[in-house]
Length: 328
Ligand code: SF4
Image 1 (cartoon, rainbow, N blue to C red):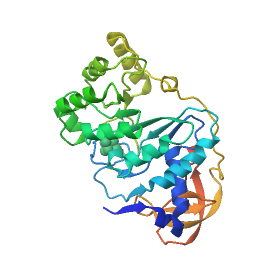
Image 2: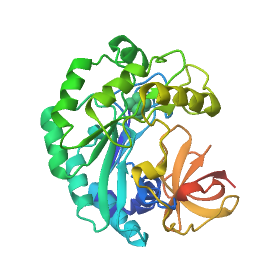
Image 3: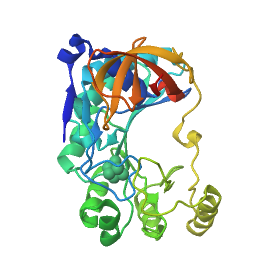
Image 4: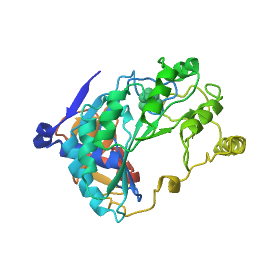
């Protein structure tokens, strides 16, 4: 598998268009919220059968983004926000514990004025007591753990890798009074339908408004789709029944995370616009490139990588300040 590390040297060499894009992609600078999602890396130690981004075993190129660059760009984005309580969510396409500079990144982000909470989405497989201590010391406030069953066989079936439930429970007990451990299982029809033991486990160590965040499995074009998703109506009906039975809130809203609307980053282009761009990097998939225009990066589909080539791109996406398109 090809791996790229985006570092200061490359930055000086002119990869900043890509980095800008990564920052906007990860920071969701275009969303009018007090939550900024950052993706410092790609790649995963698991290969879940339901993964919406087909991470793990695949033939995609992986990227690492240099932490100092991320921090300086995020500091600029945060300045735009009116709120004095911003949450940064580290949620890469893959597993953040594989990012070599994770603790340093958290430490530096925590120094930025207005950044109040730092959370991280993780599959939890690489957690140890020592690592938990380091993450807490760095300033991490919450780990959203994608943990899908209390049954080891089911856990293995959905994630493709064995996991000791008793070890995981021990880690939760070790950490729970110093950092929020929030279970975030995906409900996958036919694969892990017995979600109730997870609810009971979460209740055994957690109180408050958000005890567990069950997500509905959704079919994505670029993801692994072992089963058909259920409708949100059916999903919420199931949650309502479970809420009653377990006397717990399961349908969570942005307010449960203290996420509110805030200022949005201005978009330099709009969907359907044709822009002149320069190819900078190969994209993650075959026949895909990352091009730069107006100091932003654009994923261009069906395009051969030729560094420095000038191309015209018809934008097909501008949502959340993430731009993509095809040769125009
Ligand atoms: S842990 Fe998450 S990112 Fe990794 S393969 Fe599983 S679903 Fe995908």
